[in-house]
Image 1 (spheres, rainbow, N blue to C red):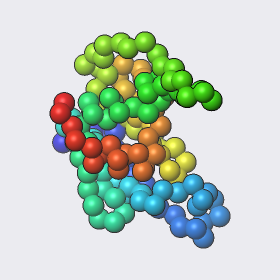
Image 2 (cartoon, rainbow, N blue to C red; image 1 turned 45 degrees about the vertical axis):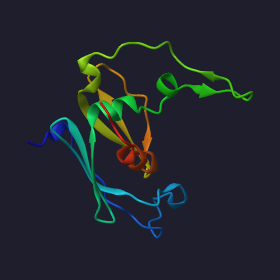
Image 3 (tube, helix red, strand yellow; image 1 turned 90 degrees about the vertical axis):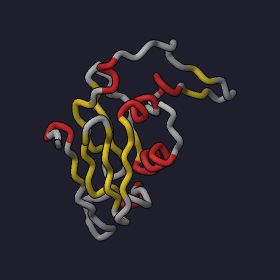
Image 4 (cartoon, rainbow, N blue to C red; image 1 turned 180 degrees about the vertical axis):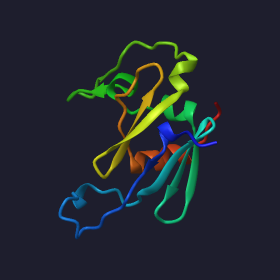
Length: 130
């Protein structure tokens, strides 16, 4: 069953489009992203598909609070570890960011992770034991 709140479609524009910032485009772009059950289904412009469990997507959040920030000396700073509730794995919606990323909004209020298309593809390819 498809959730209309989490359906997100990309309409790819090329380098001729004056409104696009082609220099920041990923080499691979999704043409459709939908939540199907407890997974995020992604159809890529090369015809490939990936299905990412929502828990894996959330635990892979690339924001500074989740993954940390590195200072000039190489020290990593991150928020204190906190237990994630079941709401942390419920996707409310997914928003496009420019022509290069998506930003999930989770039911627990977390929404600061910006997942570039390249990063999404990497997350989809990683082994998951969750």
